[in-house]
Length: 263
Image 1 (tube, rainbow, N blue to C red):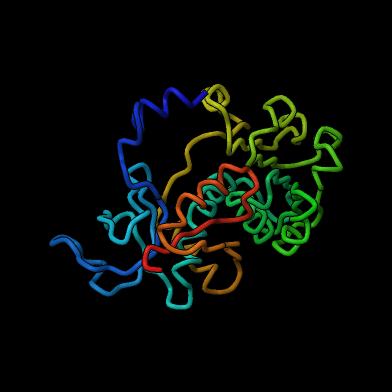
Image 2: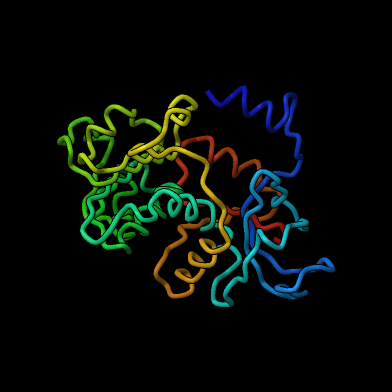
């Protein structure tokens, strides 16, 4: 349902913004006259939202969209963790606690892998849905239980089993998702269609995630302390962008894909 609105927003005959890419990490080369929190040479990371422009060697970014990157965190790790991490934080914040039962569908992707880890760090009991090839990965990330969707259907799970159901794939419908949650539980449709996004509310969460400097700083701090795995794979330089999009479009991407404009 997002095809027409996306065309209107991003460009009817092609991308209105020709350089794509929203999450990035790099070094400050110049600063504007009003910038006081950053200086030339600072290592930073950030997100540029719909303004994009990150698939490039240089980008002009608002100071409010960047944060300082810890020295111990690589640029590849920093760029990789931000999109999935901020999306997972947006939906999980204040909705789970110690002992919460959380189901993450699509647990090995960019958003899902962050959701598994952030929920586990909060003390939740996480059930992760992934392919057989990724069961070991999601277990290592903190899942207490795993479901191999190639052998076991989510439809077979008992009703009212979870305090929060997090669908990062888009194949759990609203009705079934609510059926899986407890009476006071939440259903997160992180990959919702247009209709479910419009009628979201109450216990059903579906909306664009915020890009908060505080959230980015928090995620990078977890990386620095070794408490978060960015699950990141670098494909090389800008010539790898086409291959990167092919991997994303395949629906089989594990974690985060990064390109290195300086490579």
